[in-house]
Image: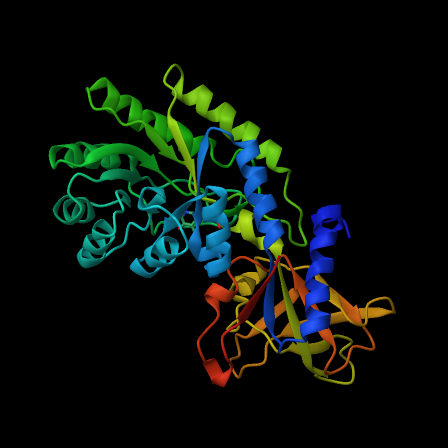
Length: 389
Ligand SMILES: *Cc1c(COP(=O)(O)O)cnc(C)c1O
């Protein structure tokens, strides 16, 4: 395999996970997270971007042991709801290490966050800035700008952010209302495969911050959002290329002023630490002439594999029958929903002797899986998570 799963440390991680699975034989499907790999990934990002504040995006994997490990390693956290705030605080994060980065929030959720000591918020609208001034008086606010997310496997579209012009006005308003107009945030799209994918947004952020500083306000901070990638069937460029491109873009666009920088990685910290073990439920054919077999697993779109929508994320697969001859397959989940098909365009070839009861392991499955799994669609329980250390 040409992916990073051939890398020595990840091979050790996969061996730890397999030992756990062989020994404990948990029910499938399940996600197993290798905590040392989470620690490794956090350390690698910190080493690559040493002067940047790392805020782990909790939604990527809210497993309490993952949050606790990252808090102990000195990570800060990007949260989107009161429940994520409670989780981070319960697992050892300080309130100053939390950014409420969701621009869409109820006034009472802002008040709750403020009551629990959270003092940093991201906003993108006048209504929300006014709600912050009322329910989180004196807090710091970053204004999120709309950016082009070309190069991203999972672009954010137009849901979040406002134009740089409006963001500039809203930072002025924030200052008038007694908030601290801290700076600018954005998200250049998830699984960003272009190391230069942040450049345009950094230019826009520098512009907004420069304008306001010239007026006598003192915004200091740019929040680069998420987007750092993980290895799947496609291997992204190395982290060092991202760090170099981001660092160079900040120096180029901010000139003499050195901003405070935050980044909110989710996927890049947890994806490669996770393996999903699934079981084959059924192997069938749709006609005598169709060469492709249909392989139905006990996990699908609703059991945690939401990111297979549009086949955007293609997980490397390992089966308990690997080694013999293979043939093309369509992969599908176990529910009665017609959309519960994982891959029909991506070319997967699996062993010809694959049978019901065999295992199919999905690699790189630590991000956006357990947190996306439904509660009881068709009566299937949500994806269980186990951690190994
Ligand atoms: C989801 C999210 C992230 C994490 O994105 P990744 O692509 O997983 O790194 C970061 N910031 C915000 C505001 C998000 O919504």
